[in-house]
Image 1 (cartoon, rainbow, N blue to C red):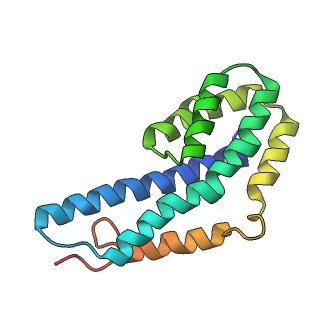
Image 2: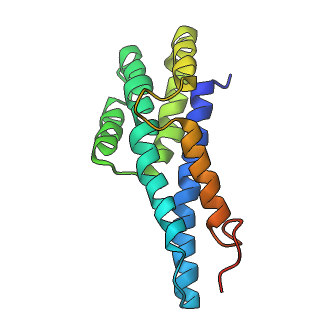
Image 3: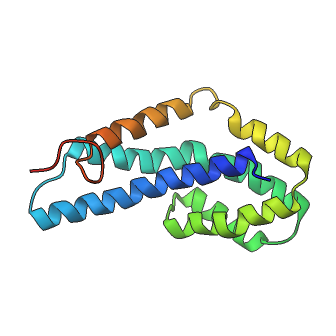
Length: 160
C-alpha cells in the first residue's frame, strides 16, 4: 500500500534532486560554452534547494515521520539520528535522500500502523504553519525556475 506521506516525501526528493542536478548540469554547460549563466535563474534554484528542505521538507520528516518511527521500533535509530543531524546542519545531499527512500521509508511501511499512516498522511497534506511559505509558493518557484533555465535542462530560451 502506498501512503500519501511516503508519496509526498518521494515527490519532494525528486523535485529537490532534479534541482540539485540541474544546477550542476547548468554550470557544467556554461563552463563548456564559456558563458555566464542567468544569475536570476541560478539564484532561484539555490534558494529553492536551500529554503524548501529547511522550512518544509525536513521539518515534516524530523517532527512527524522520524518521531513515529522511534516510538514504534528501535531499528535504524543511528540512521535517524544521523538524518536529524544532517537536517539540523542544513546538509542536503542525494545520498541523504537515498537513505530515507531506500531504508527509512521501507522501514516505516513495515512497522507503522494504519493509524500512524492516517495521522502522517493528514499531517503531510496540511498547509504550512503560519509564517512559513506554503507548498504552493514552492511549486510556483519551481515552475518559475523550470521556465527560466535554458533548454535542454529547462524550458527557457537556449543559452547563446
